[in-house]
Amino acid sequence: MTILADLRSRTNTWHRPSALAAVVLGAVAVLCVAALVLDQRTLAGAPIWAKPLKFAISGALYFATWSWLVSLLPRFRRTAGWLTNFLILIFGAEYVLLVFQAARGRASHFNIATPQDAAIFRIMGTMIVGLWSATLALTVLIMFVKLPDRASAWAVRTGAVLSLVGISLGTLMTNPTAQQLAQWKTGGHPDMVGAHTVGLPDGGPGLPLLGWSTVGGDLRIPHFVGMHALQALPLLAIALTALSARFPRLRDDVVRLRLVLIGAAGYAGLVALVTWQALRAQSIVHPDALTLGASAVLAGAVAVGSRMALR
Image (cartoon, rainbow, N blue to C red; front, side):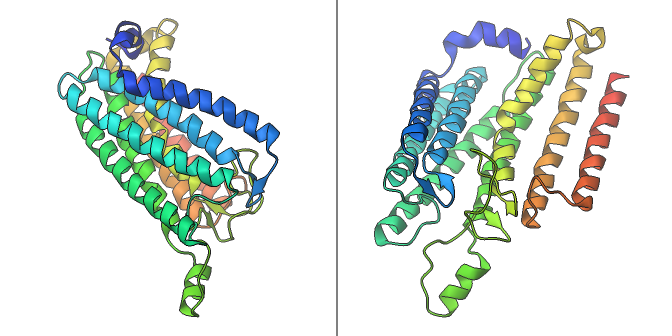
């Protein structure tokens, strides 16, 4: 059974609480768009409701995908259901704190300016550890997924693993910057501990809505790219299945499997590339010759591998 066939036959068996969470977060995203229009306040140079909007969209995609993934499990489905319920609870509580801070005009992450801000950030940090642990357990369970179409099965497995890697990369943002460490050494108390921008303070010029820095490295990029492998690789399997109606070579499940594995390797290379670029304090929109060269090698390897798989 391919992913497309699975989507048609299993919709009624999806994990309902996470499907409902996805719908709710989709509605919240609409409300955030309205808030962006009505509330023109900014924080660190970005619209104050942009972060809640991004989290709502990302969360909706995340829970919609897990709602489907849980239904694929031949065993441990009840355990996976409870783990997913725990994810909903943790994410919901964290999101409430994020919106609370946004409404107050305060940063939610890295903010230790006041005892209340520090307590909120500490609570959110603990929640993130819980979210990561539950996702790790779910990722282990996903390794037991068995589908007749091997390309679909491996798209799900590799997507889950790379998504966990992407979530883990978020820890890079919690490290104190050199400036923050210098403040501590001189007896000062920085308002923030950690940052997403590398090479410059947070709050500089960024891409519209996304906010990714256009003048320095930004660790949110590998975090985002890696996390959404959970959707990207299954979508690749869906695309290959859809294209098989037009291209007979893709009707061979072995060919599709090879292409999915090449796509997963290429996606892992992309996550490594954007992480390396961010850690070198280089903006995503201003790559240097070294980054462009590495991108070309990666793209070439994927193209050659895909060509060999098709032949």
